[in-house]
Image (cartoon, rainbow, N blue to C red):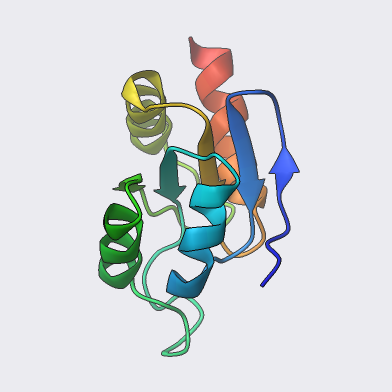
Length: 114
């Protein structure tokens, strides 16, 4: 599988929805942390649940955080949670959601609030 990665800077990149099968490739690419910004089952039952992604990430030696955000409705507390998580996360970090846009927007807002 090839994951579509959008590098924002040396420390942060985004991706669309990942699967448990993608986690090994994410680790091989050098990422150390994954931040999931997509609420469970937003895309229906076919979307992998955060718990299964967390298990796969931890099995691959990656840190995993779940900060679900509703599309087009990013709240200040979610930005703060993302900023706090990113500040302590081992870099580089891969953030994902359905398309990668929410993850990128959260990163931008967190950087602007710092």
